[in-house]
Amino acid sequence: MDKKIRDACFVLMICTESYYKRVMGEEEPGKGHGVRWEGNLIYQYIYNAGSTNTKFVPVVFDASNRDYIPTPLQGATNYCVSTQDGYDDLYYRLINKPKIEKPEIGKLRALPERPVKTNPIMYLTGPINIDLWNEAKWRATFFMGYEEEPPILGLAFENEDAARKIFETWHERYGENDEYEELRVSIVEGKIQGEPPGYTVHVGSDPDAAIKRFKDAGYEFDVDDDIMMMVGQINRMNPSEDSKYLEWFKDSYKSYKTFFLVPGVISEDRQNLKPLTELRIRKGRVVFRNVDEIGKNDIDSVVLGIKEK
Image (cartoon, rainbow, N blue to C red; front, side):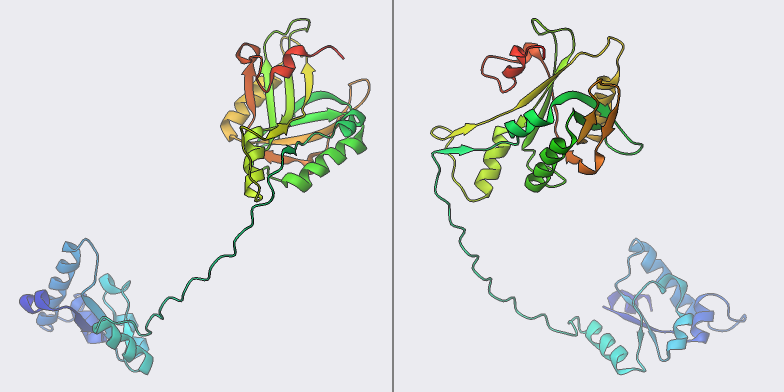
């Protein structure tokens, strides 16, 4: 019996109530010793195969007999051969062929060529509409957060209508997630001559991200010959020495590795702030720097010449 099992590709187990009782050791004493011995061999083969079964196939002649499939094989595919489908499924299993032949893969259609648009001599891009920002009056930067959410970096404006237009325009261009990280936000700490202690927030466009988006749109861009003009806005914050808001934002951003850029409306006396969180934009990158890192031709060099408003 052991040799026959060892040499066989498949062993069909015809599962009936009597067979189940004998394999599971529930038969009355003196009966079914052969089946019990067979059951022990089957258990051992499955055990030796690391509980993987490819040899033993449970077969029933009536759907109700599925209750009599031995426990170690109840997870295996079983076949009820009293139906034509069940019989056919078993047949194709034994001859190791699919019941339905896989059709041949069709020919791939040629993708339409995407024309490369005319290479412009100058490509002007940027998220900053100067007139709109002058109307909005960016007056402060704020940090806030909600439980179980990334932190918020907020830009506080005096004019709510203009502030909304700025972020609505960004939503049209970037969506709710700035996929290309084209909006660049940097926070520059360190002493600036003529300025009280604090930090500067610089908002503009990331040149590398803008070029990538430009190329993905079908344009060509030569970094040696073409010119890109970038416009940015800066805001100087002078918090008290014991203020912990910036450090909290850094820690939270480090944890989530993302943040929300949100507009807000601040009163003229700077005592009241209303965040407009429905206009938030999710971003993955904020640049933390110190003035000592910034050279003459650095994108953030504009912060070194800031004057008190």
